[in-house]
Length: 219
Ligand SMILES: *Cc1c(COP(=O)(O)O)cnc(C)c1O
Image 1 (cartoon, rainbow, N blue to C red):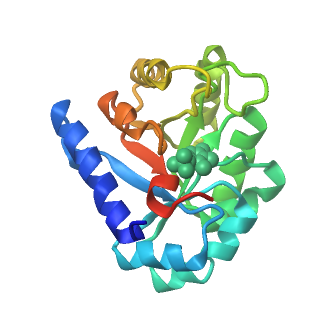
Image 2 (cartoon, rainbow, N blue to C red):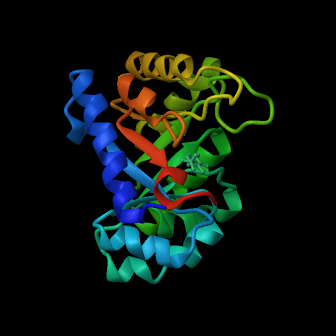
């Protein structure tokens, strides 16, 4: 089995190769290392290899992983990539540097209010349920415009869109659709692509890919 540092190199190389194939500057694609359910030694190995952007899907687990390390590594960038309950907004705004899962009006209002209170502006992504799956988080595509207007009204800075395609469909369709939606709303960033499909996502314009297993091994 490769070390975390070797895996990082492999994933970076793949991103760079696909980006170049599609006429994109590799520096416009950021790798977010998804550290949920991974042991501390692997996280430390990624930090030692220079990785600074990490993704977590639960506020509480992220606090356990990162609260102390944040002081040691002030250049860390922590992304929340899992659903956020409004009663966890205070902790989330304290800990994270990017929130990728804004998907409903009450969360928009709670985040805007809490950021004002803490005097801390965290760029957010709106998560879109591109497959309109019933059990899945994310705003339905037809409701995106209204949610983005609310974000503008509340002063919540939206830097892009995020999606998790249905497992039963070709991800490329969803990546292309997310890009279309982002273009229509003049949003610059796309968070899409995981271990199984990050190269396809880069080909279709991802500016952030969220990769766990390919870096750290199975959870
Ligand atoms: C766990 C997770 C990932 C990483 O998945 P891998 O298949 O391990 O790369 C990416 N995005 C989200 C939202 C996740 O929850």
